[in-house]
Length: 130
Image (cartoon, rainbow, N blue to C red; front, side, top):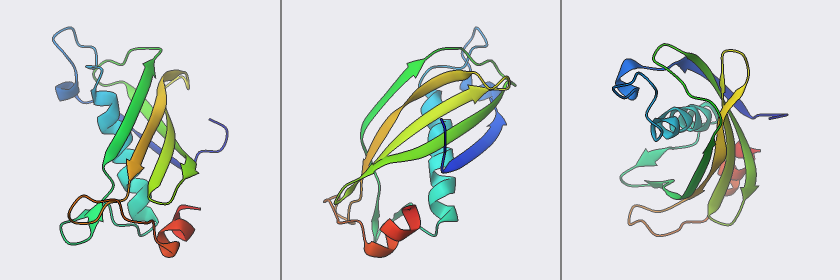
């Protein structure tokens, strides 16, 4: 990814692996989501609040290129690929310690109110995401 908006590093936790010691495939999304939330908080954007709503996923996809094992170092790279009226589209890559892409994909979120109905992304949120 050429110009990510956010980078987050870490280490694969034992609890995210299966009996063979390989990271179980859906756990990629846990690490990507943690990076996404860190980015939103760093920009002063609310991730979730019972009164204000949040950003649930409406679409996710991921392609896997290389496995991770317990203790492997990783880096998540995030970029925004589009902002709609109430939606936010992300591109992500998860790289290993050698900088090789282990997984990549997309996520689409919709800004919703406390009742789960789409809510327009505010001007201040748009400015913070830019």
